[in-house]
Each structure stands twice: as C-alpha cells, then as structure tokens.
Length: 321
Image (cartoon, rainbow, N blue to C red; front, side, top):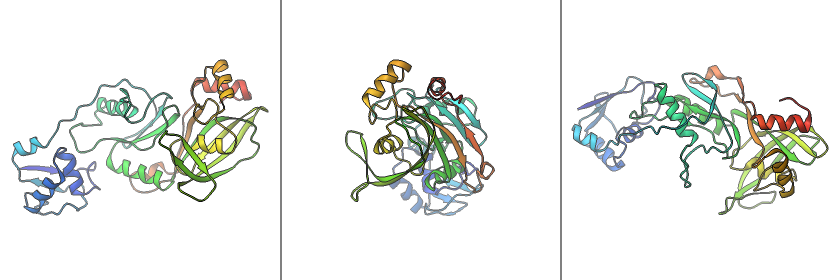
C-alpha cells in the first residue's frame, strides 16, 4: 500500500486527474476500475474520482509496488540553455522576456530548445520543480515565434489556474508596441471575424459568416510622416491577431513577411537588418483578484524592447524607449 498526501501544490484538482498524473502511463479504464474495486481510497473512504482534493487529504493506493511502477514513467528534465531573462519572480509565478526566434512550446518542427523546456530546466535547477511529482509548471500565455516580450508561467497549480482564468476572463491587460507602415493619427478598435486557413494564414472579415470574433485596440504614440509607432491592447487572443488586424485597416506591421508590405519589409531589412515583424509585448497589468495571486492585483510589469528595436525607435521617431 502506498499513501499520497496532498500538499498545496496538488490541491484544487480532481482525484482522477491527479491519479492519471501520478501513474502517468495508466489508462483511464484502469484508474476507474481500481476506484470501483475500492483499491484506491480517499481519506479512508471509497472514492469515485470526481472529488476535489484539499491540502492534507490522503490517497491510499492498495496496489503492489510492481503495479504502480509499471504504470509510472520516470520524467526527465531536458538540459536546455537559458533563452530568457527574468522580469519578475516569486514563489508562485515567473515572468520572463522571450526573445524573437524562440518557440514557446514544441511543435511538429521538432525545435530543440523551446522556452517551456528552458523554464522547466531553470526551475529544476532552483529546486522548484520535481519532474517525478504530479505537477509540471506551465507557461500560461503564448507569443508567436518571432514576437518578443512577456511570457507568464505558474510555479504551482493554484497559480496556473489563476493565470489561466485571468487570461480567459480578460483580467490580465497585455500591451504591445509595433511600428506600422503609414500614418495613424487617432486610436481605435479593430473587430471582426477571424479565421485561419490550412496554409497558416489568418484573415479578418467584417461580414457575417464563419469565424471567431476578435477585438484589438490601438493608439498611436508617434509618427514621422511615413511610419507610426503604436501601442496595441489585445482584448482577445488569437494567433497572428495583431498582425492580421493591422493589415485589415491598411497599416501593416513592418518586417511582417506574412501580412506586411514587401517593399517596406525590404527597406527595413536592408537599413536595420529587420528580418521579421516588429512586435513586442512590453507591458502586463494584473486585475485578477482571487486568493492565490491577490497580492499582484493592479501591479504592472514592463519588459524593455530588444536593443535593436530601441535604436529603430530613436532613429525613426526621436524617442528614447
């Protein structure tokens, strides 16, 4: 018999979810069969699997060690070079600065060094992540491969749940800076129906039809008669949303090879060495409330743009960022 004592890091999740993490190769059918046969109990009583766990709860596994081990695959932390800077960190969350050219999660391209892997290895080195426990720290927002800026990660289950709720309910204010072709004198709102084709190219439509509603707010910071430095606030979060929305109003992001202007891109590539979209997530403000992250309420965190971007802003708009 083996006992699992629930700590603050495991509380707040269903019993069956935890069991599937603990015996991470066991099929669901096995877990539910053991629950029905009373081979798994919660606080000495029969359990069904849907119970929400609290700190101090005791799960008893009336299973042989061989059985438990046969359904447990040992996790390993992949040694990964650190590819981010820390903006803010405490016992619950990590805010880091993602450079352009770094992917957040692994995908079909088989990228070797993802931001998620780098964060896990960093937390493992700080003794804040046990790869053989039931919880894996998690990145809670995404940025496109060539978009730089703030990424949030939760170090424990309660923090991950609160961050995910905050992004889902739009309680976390995300701001970006970008430079677009053309002069934009007034702020506004871009909304419409968003869709993406098999070619990974998104589009925005004002007409009724298929698609997901998206909303993007923008305001100009400065212009030089040819280009405009802008601040963007995302009210929804879809891949490529900012880029396709700005293209939709005739103000494409400079350097954007998917939605931008080819001649403009060529100019910025030759003059500044810009080979991708100029888009940076520079500010995040929390309005979450709740219990786990209440101390962050109304706190603002800034992420300085890359040095190359700062030089471009100074050269084009005579602004020191």
